[in-house]
Image 1 (cartoon, one colour):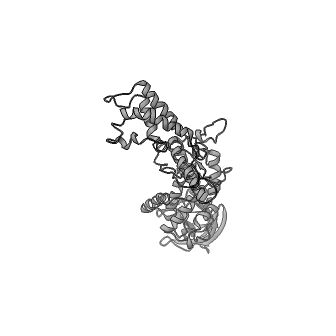
Image 2 (cartoon, rainbow, N blue to C red):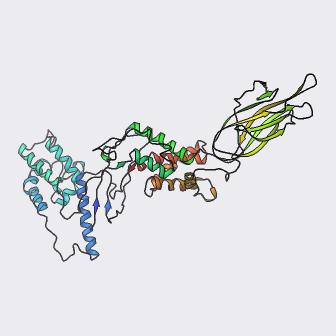
Image 3 (cartoon, helix red, strand yellow):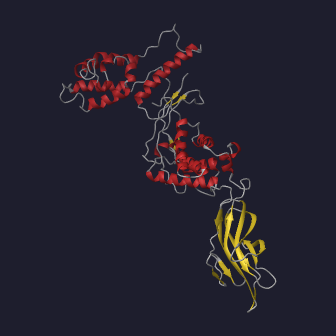
Length: 477
């Protein structure tokens, strides 16, 4: 038996952040039936269900598993016969007198012809139009004021028949389980979905904290009919999506030799600023600042310095991270040509204090004065891709690239796979195309490959295909 389930869409706000519609397509249910979503009128449902029942019956007979066969007589439908009899005897004469002039063989306004209305099959196919006609007849808007008008009793005859006809349900059609409102993820579902998708633990980072409270229906916060979406929701969803991508994938980190300057906020009391930047230390002291390491990896810390000799030693530079010495150097460079003193080390993600210390001051009045000038402190790296420690979600999303290549097709593969999971179904080519358009726009403005992909992933997380749980529609039009 062919089982057909119907569903409808809940209303939503118009926004540039979330737009589009729930795509309809055939989807087999666990019972072997078809599931229907998107908004359709009850009459249109009935028409489709009637044809689905007929097709199912014919198909079953063809397979030899029961149903209608050429040798059987079709079952009679007393209600359909009664409605058709009332149409022919009571309603059609009124329509012929007052309606065929505009909706008949000579003229068919809006493509509607009431003279072709003879059987219940035709009634089911014209369900939407008849529903509108019923309202216009009952309110006196049809026929127009400049045309002959039926009596109140005649209007009542037509209205009552339309009410019964629009409520008609074929007896051989599959059962209709009723309407299905697409279900927006409530706050709890949103948290858990982000955990499964990006590994963001809701016990550590509550991504739903900034979302408006869910409406309650019958004591529950997961009733689809009351889970509305407001403009405030849309703004909050965008912020949550951006935060989720950052937390789940970590910051955008690319291996290379680019240098980042450490701002020297620790200024020595026993020194002075120098013209080329940095500070001159006249006695033992330190210059340093805080640096935010984006990801755990191998880096190179570079101190540019020069000194003035005194005694039997060169100035000694001690390089320290979070107060612990990681390397030390004799500074032989002079002011005319400062030297670079480097150390490779692994730094954990987070905020660190990096400083250069002058540790062997020497001064003999009029004889010798050993000093150290720290021009700058820089951090280079990560020095290699293999050294970068990334979240598991990053590997799950980006490691599908062959040999780690970056290009448009690699981006398409990453985005498609992510959208498949986010939308809880195979993504449609047109949906991938929309996300790829965002990737292309970001690349055109100079964004890196990974940053451009992340923009598309963020867009997927504010799509109604992600925020709503729905079912596919075999009648998308």
